[in-house]
Image (cartoon, rainbow, N blue to C red; front, top):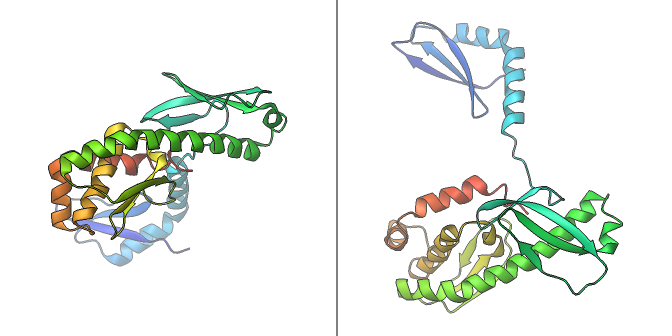
Amino acid sequence: MSIHYKIIRSDKRKTIALQIKNNEVIVRAPKGVSPNFIQTLITNKTPWILKKLAAHRQHCAPVLPTYLPNSTILIYGLEKKLCIQYQRSKANNSINITENEVNLTLPLLVEKKKQDHSYLSKQVKKKLANWMKDQAENYLAYRLAELSKQLKITPASYQVKRYKARWGSCNNKHELSFNYLLIMAPTWVFDYVIVHELCHIKHLNHSVQFWGLVEKHMPHYKQADQWLKQHQTKMHW
């Protein structure tokens, strides 16, 4: 089996070292060591390398949310335990958010099928989606107006929907869209996405001028962008 690896040479190094980092095999070697010698070392160490790579992938594998009882879910950037109860009445469609929990009520019909985790997860996600969409619309109703006034940029319109691979969008008609899953992020991160899309009205690209305008109104935009990248798995739908 062929092992792909990267060689990093150094004048100061006296010995050869193998390293597994970010799912990559790295050989740190003195400058005088021949490529053939390194290849022989890799061949001899192949079982060890494969074992380490497998362990590394398992350790680094993202843990996707299950949306099942007692799993955790991000709300406003905080992890909360998902608690589910069942009742006969369909009148109670609210979701109660406490400091540590998301309390969600489902019909008794769902309880009868709760052992089917796929079915239960879909019912939970459906109810959460409606709640998140309402929350995102409520937040945007006033916060978009505030930030538009601050930037002196006004969109033609906006809508709330769910995207699979983006947090917001702006088209050439100055119409904005926002992903309602942003309710899972802290409000300062949600604000960054709003500012990001407003700035696209002035610059429909990611030019230096665009990022300069973003930074002017959101100095910590890099931290917000990094937060979204770090937590995108937990916000997976």
